[in-house]
Length: 377
Length: 224
Image 1 (cartoon, rainbow over the protein chains, first blue to last red):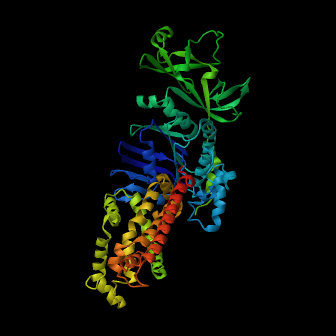
Image 2: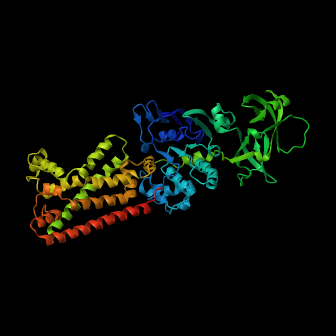
Image 3: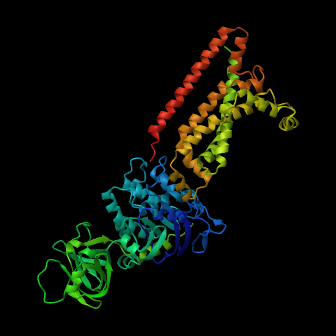
């Protein structure tokens, strides 16, 4: 299995130095606003675009681009998922999936086609023509086609953007599970933060052709390194949690030492034991002074310690330690009134409807073992 | 009716088409996809027979095939026969003069293909030749058919080049268009009229076939 991707890529506005430990984080999201150069970077990694001199791309000890070196796309053995799928219209679903299997002995191709379609959740589409596939179906077939030749690296360009909204939401949940199941290190390009959260383990934030921050999802979303990153990821705390149950239709989520209540209207169907990301907008976090309990409407009251206060426009950004990171925004009068300073003890209050849950299956230990057993060709 | 001349014309058109298509397909693929500036020059050279008077093209071919040219001499040493005024020389001249009719429809067809399909093919490990055979050609059947029909028809209708290069040997280099010219010269208007009517019908048939193909292309191969 591929371990490390190192890349220095220059092309037009893009100038990026990137090192990804693919073994540790199976799905890396390349996140940034439109026009940041994400797709260009992905195309350079695939060998579809040729980076400018000074670039250097290597997967483990295989150099793909460098001084006097340019390995063409067809010899990189990467899987590439195009934004609008790019299925061959003159071939059937099975023909599309088998297209990249010309190096496999003929008698093993059928089995591999079935295996790839199965891995992409598209086994039932095998005999279909590519005409008349729905967006979601075409997406799965394209994924199967990319997976079939057993690529070293999988590159997905805005995988969900060509789909209609309901399909996107449905496939967003599935896609991460499919990718983890396939066990092939993956880089996903997206400008959609929910998509980034739903799919990734690590996030690299690309803005105006520069890489601003690379880190785990929680790291980047809760502690943006620059103002630009903060603007791109939004004012939201993102916490890893696990559903423990439901009470009166309100989900109970274990986050660190605390239980957080969430009404969870966006993603019904989550069950106890499911891993989720818990998202709380800083605007929705109210601060109260600790003291005798009064009856208030927010369901979540978390004892917190202020770790930092930084001005942000007319507001103040208050970083809290609740056992995990949480951010709140307050006005200056509030600060005076509550006498907030680093080290102050406060209670963070969040209404249950303000807590958003995104399904986020954890990396299973079985995936790597499963893959190792599949063997190579 | 001059069946012998019709036979020569059909044979010439068949051989020319059979030779031209395998040449035109890779050339058209290169022209459609290349980003190099030399592509424009090659395209201009390919299109030359469209604007060049057929007699000019015929003159050059005749000079090149004659016994005084290096190629003509080499051919004579190789085969012991002269090249000018033979069926072979007609084929060479026809291939050159029909080149744009074979190449241009294919260029149009290839250039209209979705580039991402070609990129998908290369990411999936296929060479350029593999992509040409497995994606570009199967998706350009209408373009290929148009190229074949146009080449065939244009060769049948060729007059100036054939007149220059072929001479007028019955059963060898005397094609339909030359035969009609001869009949008129001999005041045999009746034969000329009959043969001309056949040619007219044939041309109309060919064009109808091409436009049918074009219309089908739009409905049968929707771009994704």
